[in-house]
Image (tube, rainbow, N blue to C red; front, side, top):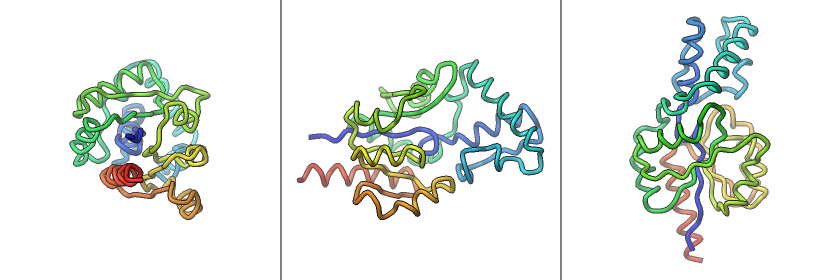
Length: 212
């Protein structure tokens, strides 16, 4: 039987920090543009733009989320985190269904995410937007997902404790989780460096399970 496979968007497929910091820069030109995904934490107020006062950063962030929530077009103007792997992702999505599970706010996150994936070669994307109060572990269970690629240290325990395979790309903000748990969840928790490595690992897990 085929294994059901899910993939997160931001921090796995898309470069959220670059897009978000570009928006912050349009609000306050002193806000620097972050090029990659290596943020020390998800709480931007803690570390972003150290030369600015924390209240200034907090106000710019609040204004940015106001814009995202009230207009479309934020989520479909991202850059891929691994542009060189988009072709492989599209090929994998053709071979077997990939459910793109994402927790995104805004005007039309489902539509924006779907059109972004289409524009990047995923012909008929399956997109599930996590609502407020919903948990990724529960969604994986409900949808019968076996393997998920996800970068979040926040959802990792619930995903793994439900018995799903979790493949986690390595970033600064999930470093503590990776170090604390790399020997836990026997054979269910896999740590990778790139999207390509994550896709190959998912394929390997699927093939191994199919042989059994």
